[in-house]
Length: 344
Ligand code: A3P
Image (cartoon, rainbow, N blue to C red):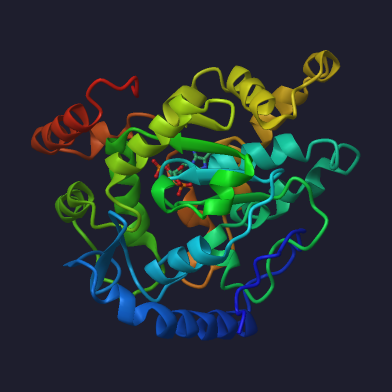
């Protein structure tokens, strides 16, 4: 039985989470759990965050029984069929996924939405996670965000490079990877985890979050290995994998957006630049605008739209990490990224 609706494309952005969708997701998650449980319960297991246990699959840690879980990652890896025109955005959680999704969506679809009332641009109405769906949520979705006909298809994922579906690697499609200073990612994780609306979840201290972050026991951890693999893949084929940092994107965002558009195969014309189209996209996707648009509503059950918008700054970690915590993080980063041109 094929339970995985991965032939997807086309956006029905207006669909909101409802109880039918939740029921459907639960059903698919149960099916996936039945399918893979025997396999993954033999994998290395640790106490992690969000679920009793995290399991290691192909060198990275995952929670279970969730949209972003070992079950959905294996299902995506086994069944997802990429197309050569697809565009993938990959990140570690809390490294600016929401922002880069908005930018890519706005760049690629700028002609489509050129003549609409700017107030009706999808990014003014919906969470960027609705505009660019995660592979992990699409695979269990009752109403996949895309339907046939949209090209290029835009998807995102947190899946590590080594675990990507073969068809993504073989199709020759483009992939944008964005990472962020791990100290800011850690603090962002801390606030995100504690803000999730599932009150049954225990609140963590920053020290506890540091501990699981460093050990890699967060979904898709360890952070450093994830970044390193995409960095290597990008160095080997920069025409197919663009490696970005949140910090770099923050400095002169307009020129980075131009570079991103070129990489994606949607370069801005001189006329567009002269008419201020690049600046419009930068503004549309700015932290302030997106935060305002997403101040109400839920992206998924237990995950309010506003959980994805906190400070949106570089270097905020200075206000949250002690000297000792900073030293721990810096030591690991120095060791793991030694010899690589990754700087924040
Ligand atoms: P902070 O918690 O440091 O504020 P992700 O999207 O991967 O979950 O990452 C969330 C982080 O990106 C949060 O960081 C959030 O505030 C920040 N962010 C969200 N939208 C942004 C935007 N448009 N510009 C810059 N940062 C943004």
